Length: 93
Image (cartoon, rainbow, N blue to C red):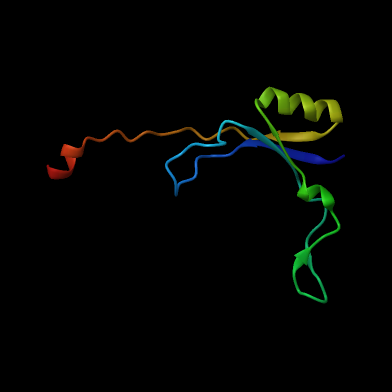
């Protein structure tokens, strides 16, 4: 039985925007290890499910899809946002 991960992307630390952080992603776990190609040396495998990434508007929609398709899944909770509120005047104390 294929297994999948359902998770929500955290905010990118290098940018201030929060685009695409509200969508939930279903991603399949790798079924086989990657091995180097003898000709090019690039890592690859015969598992094509590793290329599939599905996005859902809510976690419930992703869970419903996984249950409907008979997938075992792991739900990874979204990380908590921690706000560090600071006044500009605090820099001069």
